[in-house]
Length: 337
Image (cartoon, rainbow, N blue to C red):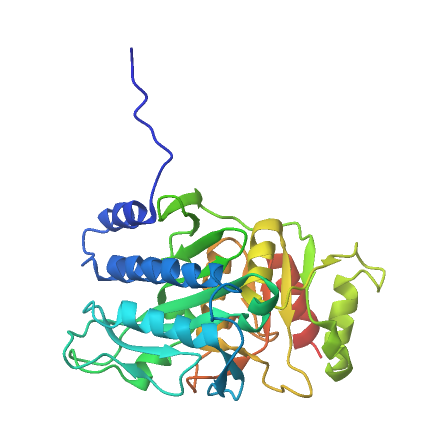
């Protein structure tokens, strides 16, 4: 009897190592960062699953650097990621949406050649009503010389220089999607064995769009060209079939649905947020990298997200991300005004 040696059971650790072997020059540092992030995601997932049973719901009683009220799980998730990542000797610094400045690597630990930027718990204000939330991360190679503390210049790099990016969605299942520039791949957490297993290899976002994700409560604050764009997406100008409007209000949840099902997520600037609301380094860049690797596109309405040169650690940006044709429509209609 000829035994079939093929197995579809591929853990994220195995997949990362196999990909590393394709690059003889690899040091293993980036692989270690991704493995540590997977561990942090498991720890956060365990906390999210306890929401409502343990004292992890509600406000923490403090504000983050953007002046937003922090939830308890924001702070817990931020601490988990910092503690999971600061001692491996692979990072020279970190930055979080929840903290004002650079998070240094403690002196007692070795410093490495990469920086990590992350949003520890995107959509956390929805956790009290059991809406999916997520973690978003971006990895860059340090630009500063030597092996000292990472600098602001190490963080302020355009998105096309990312060496890895990903997100974790904590929903009906926990799923981690990441890219290192060789496609986007998804791994679903099997809670019975505590392992992320390859479930969505080589994700490709559909060319034909089904969904539009936009908060229409801001319509009164939009510029006329943005109103015209959303009307077109909804088929109200007679030029196309309408997209189905689906808006969760949790960026990772909306992006994930559109990535797999086909669609566009729209968060334009408005009179209240003239520079946009989403964070370029913690949200827009990593999701744009993933989307492009899956055959989609991302723009701020004027240019490709990944080409923007950041000038501030907590810089905001408009975002139009998803199926390529829909993002092209946005860029054409907004850039021509």
